[in-house]
Amino acid sequence: MVLFSLALALPANAASKAEVERMFRAWIDKDLWPAAQKTGVTEKTFRAAMEGVTLNWDLPDLVPPGSKPTKQQAQSQAEFSSPGAYFSEKRLQGLAATGRGLAKTHAATLRKIEQRFGVPGEIVVAVWGRESGFGSAKIPYSAVDVLATKAFMSTRKDMFRKELIAALHIVDGGDRTVAQLKGSWAGALGQPQFMPTSYLQYAVDFDGDGVRDIWGSVPDSLASIANYLAKKGWQAGRSWGYEVSIPSGASCAQEGPDLAKPISAWAATGITRISGKGFPSGEAKASGMMLVPAGTHGPEFIVTPNFYVLKEYNNSDLYALFIGNLADRIAYGSGSFQGQWGDVGKMLRSDVLAMQKALVAKGYDVGKVDGLPGYKTRRSLGDWQTKSGLKPTCYPDASLKSKLR
Image 1 (spheres, helix red, strand yellow):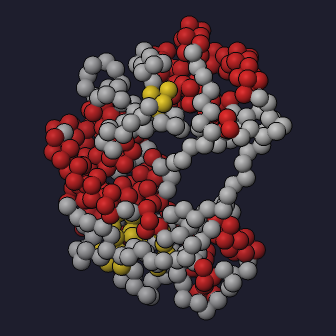
Image 2: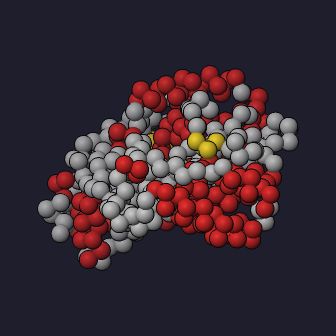
Image 3: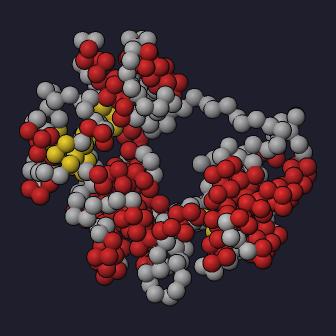
């Protein structure tokens, strides 16, 4: 992400940088310390941690006192054009090759992790690769500086204040010093990229040295990822899902976790695995959900509840599919999804928002009216298309802008 410097362009009515710095020091004493003290942070830890903290003016989404949040720009990210842009084949091939080698290197550790947490090694390695390049990504920021800056002046101050206080508890507990507490520009920590609250809840000491070290210890990092997924409900022995072919007689407007049914019931509608293999016999009575992230413009899936566990790590259908595909490449040497991501035009978030509002006006449930084409928007669009005599595609594309008003 490209960072920008607020130091160069503070609004005319905003406080000067020097004034903001003074407000920040006052906020630490009058606001942050009482809040931290209530949660049990010791004053010794608090004072030592906050003594050298500085505002990082280069972070995104900052709202200095006296200024207003920047208006959201129209967007044309992966979610608003073809989702295919998210699945860089070059990147996936590179991650898979490295991941296969590391899965062999750490095979014994991964076996123990799967025995304890029930999460397959390839899933753990895929998350590790996606989050931090298997621990190779530079994570240079002082987490306390980042979180303090964002807790004081960002668009999500309350959330970052909670994370800052959690970071102080990590220091208070002795796992890391303030200097050792390194994170991303958003405050995510270590190789699994946990926010501090997740570290406190899910980080694991798996190498037995008495410290939950998700920065320098591969066993701790991998086990912490597995523990997170297990605590979020990973079902041992089940896949994340299957790429499928949905016949023309089966509507694409059946997707979503709230429309789950036994995988055998999906198969009875003519849905088949695109690989040509049957669904595993043990899955017949287990629940599955249709997923069409690009409607009929892209690959189609029957996913298991484990898919939604992957979304707990990052709440995006595309993220969970990326992890699933990467894990399959690592475990089985498979390749890209066979279905092709089609071109749906350069849709802006405002375009999707207008479609959502039109669907709501017609009585459809699109979930959040936010310009994001989630599963409720996709299936409502498919229902509307069918009722309007159109071939359902279950995805907002440029051709529908003039038809759906």
